[in-house]
Image (cartoon, rainbow, N blue to C red; front, side, top):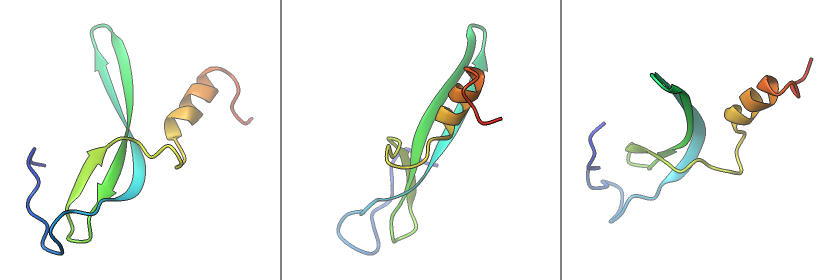
Length: 73
């Protein structure tokens, strides 16, 4: 994915619609890092990663709860 988005073919500007949240894990020398990002899509077909949609289900919360022993049996 390029860093610069192409001009919208439907309108003057992109109108981003939230699609879903996605998680990203990176393992490095100092441990493991998790990030939750939101996937957004325009009607013209372009997509981007942005801030996570806080109203949507967050799979990272399930992971944290399971690690803390609060998950469903």
